[in-house]
Length: 118
Image 1 (cartoon, helix red, strand yellow):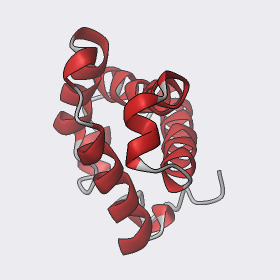
Image 2: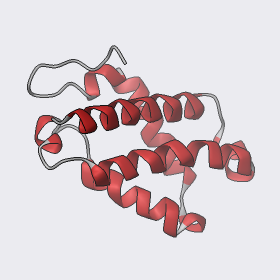
Image 3: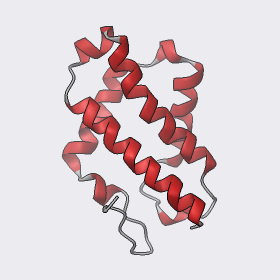
């Protein structure tokens, strides 16, 4: 992994933590009607997708547990088809991620590096 990809990955991790934190404290009913919450949740998710697009080709091999193509596709949905986002799906996925595993466990690469200290 290049130094630049390492920095991107750190940002990706931070955006994931931010999105999970936002999703934890909001109801679907409020998210469906509150544009400020929608924007605050979609920004970090869109950035994760943008970073996924720009990662080097070796990074997905190191982190096969990250759904790289899903993140790239979701980024495109956020930035090009905003009105069609189903926030119930977004919340379910983020909350499932929070309850099933710690984020640190989700981003442990094959090489043995642990990026949980970010």
